[in-house]
Image 1 (cartoon, rainbow, N blue to C red):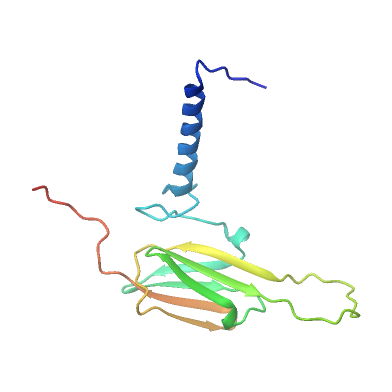
Image 2: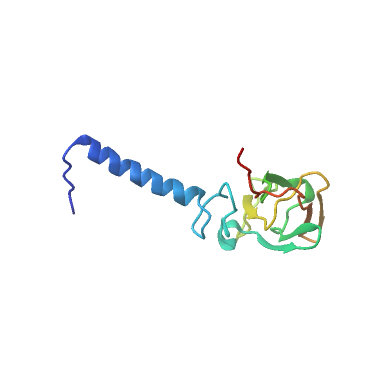
Length: 159
């Protein structure tokens, strides 16, 4: 074990500040290790597909971004929630509720899981909430989001 000796308490505080800055960069960065979408660009991957439990395809077409997701079995349309967190991040949440059962009913094996799953999907382009539409058929969710015509980047003239 290594013990660090500091000249003053301010040196130790400076080390803690640097550590917190590195955590903040990891949390809000734009690289592959980022945990949340950054202020400029979304992270390339927020949660692994195995961890989230939802497999998705994201297509960037002419006028819209299309997200197609394989939902967990047993989920109905009413159990799914879609939220546009930022113009470039879509949250898909779903909950599979446990069926009521008789206390005297015995199971030999019970592997089916109940609970909720949430995944945040980074989008390749900024989109609008207005005009968005979604459909759910045979366990597949399809979300169509219109692209924003506003440019996020631009030059600013100096007076």
